[in-house]
Length: 334
Image 1 (cartoon, rainbow, N blue to C red):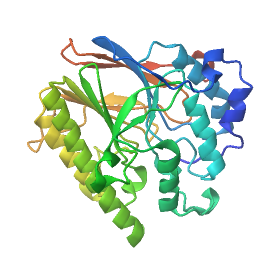
Image 2 (image 1 turned 180 degrees about the vertical axis):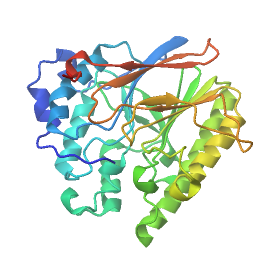
Image 3 (image 1 turned 90 degrees about the vertical axis):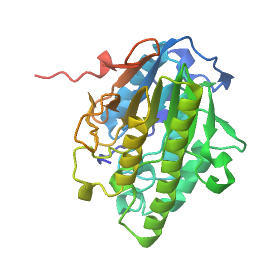
Image 4 (image 1 turned 30 degrees about the vertical axis):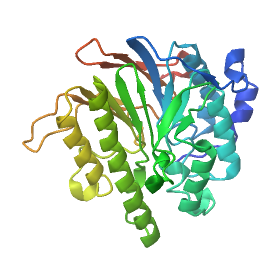
């Protein structure tokens, strides 16, 4: 949601960067096998806002590519909130994501559609940009879709249900005794309170998100999973009073209800406010901390790093997290 300017495309930057050949090869669309009991994934988002980040991004991707990861999740905002939302930018980022050596699951960010009405974004219709994102980054028909990346994993998408055919970006998959669910929950108050047309979009998408979230927990229970990881773009404002997070109250309510009724561990991954943090900000109605819930906010501009999540269903916490500071991207303070 934060704004910065940038003057080049990443595809061009990466094309001339000294990265391992595997990172620049064309997408091979190879399937990935299910992992052993213990595995690792990469978490990232909120990058490519400035020329500095364009210069640092190849090192970030090289770090991710070199790590033994099952897949990578990008939690949205692949551009600044003050740069164009044009087709060229979309095509550039899609090409970059498909160069990932690991399967990459992308969730939309508000800078890619809800905020595209701004003059410095090109004064686009946000709903038209959302439709373009869905067609470009979540293509194809059928009940399952492939992730992005040179290797791919299968994702179950919500649009398989005729009643939710437009919500192609809402995805779900199981991996190593954990259910993962991606939801289109946005910064900028989740696109609520702007225009009547956008409020209608919020109502429809919000209902779909709540339904998809409940279904993910139901699948996790049915499968006997030890954990659930939900991924959204927005910081839903755990610390804010309800009046300041009206676009997220429903989501937070369902997330709390489902977490309290789930025997395993629950993680919410998000970006949006660019404040790397790992904590337990959920409280019950009795104002007691919900111990089986963890919030992870990924790095974002100007910090060009990523988060490693280790999943081990044989441990009580199931999930553990480590910041991966890319040496080439460290700011040298004086």
